Length: 330
Image (tube, rainbow, N blue to C red; front, side, top):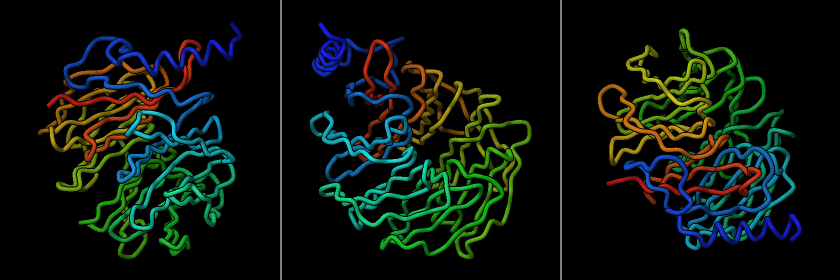
């Protein structure tokens, strides 16, 4: 049997094998592995995810492959692989205009596609290192972190309508619509930037005070609670409205995404160490469990609507790249 034939056989076997038989590590009562969806020959790093809820399409930024994977969640299968990107890092979907946005670290572009047929639209050119993207459905605006320190604001027509200057390259950031603020992780300077969206300017810088590598961030839209995950040391921090640390807890290593499950008052953090850490999201931060994934599986997406956590798992010598779907316990 050739290596390519063996690989295809392995992918077929994984698609047909029940998720319970594929689970690795200890069984968790907090998250149950419901399915593994092989996404084909994707080499290297997988970056961020987004979702079209109406069509149940999951978009996967396949950075190491210079491609965008489109997973049909209704059938747990790859629908399409779009190629021709330059280090795709972030992906967002604006339901109002049915548009997919893919940011490219290699050439700084934001590529736009029609959600119905993945037809390419007019790209937006930024300076370099286009990275995290956030979509604000209420204003039909797209925010893209890029360059040595900036967030571009793009309207629904694809026009850059504002540029927010920052002292360093932005990583994860979150929009607080109630407070008209943007909170931005700036790991290169060990700070969190605070942007007043009403004037489009940075109004405060919060030092991390002894913690570095603040890449992931989550925001509770109801309470305004800000969560920041750091890599050195690996900690999950809750920040008060003045930037001071209100609570702190140990965290798995190499975290890249963190989400709030408001329904269960839980927090999920996915880490490259091969773990999803689960925290009690009540007062304070208490780690209540961990779920084993795979080394390097540090990017994920929580969908409150679908009530599922999607984890991107890299290709290894024994398994193809895949999206693992976890169902939380009631």
